[in-house]
Length: 174
Image (cartoon, rainbow, N blue to C red; front, side, top):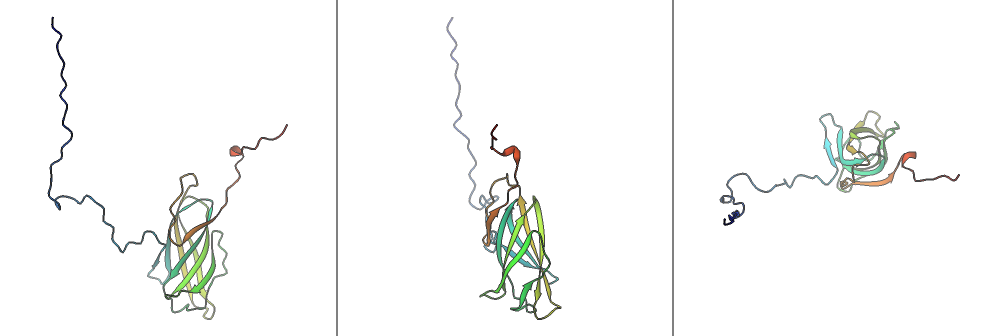
């Protein structure tokens, strides 16, 4: 008996219907040039206060954050941080910005994971009735989740790791 010959037909590949350009949904992502997703965003709120979004940070890390508030006529050049201590956010410097407004430098210690919002108050040294609230919002990820790309105006200035005896490679002497 003659052996039956098996044949396998090969497909010529996958073929897509050709569509003229502009037909169907766009095949690329377009970003609005007004989108500033690489810098710290300062947004005025309706009540005269400010929201400062600083992007992704990492737990147990200390950051220096620099941002510029728009001109606040009531504060002018005599702005100072309120003497209310905050365990996680501390304003270290306030100076007039060359382009107008106030350049604010602060330190932030990211303690826990999640979307966190810390508040600081700016006061006027000459007018006791003036108080501007600055809310700093960060998305804080666990220290084991990788390294975030920091926004312009944010830099890591230290790591505060807790001692974990189980992860220590210290082998005592007997």
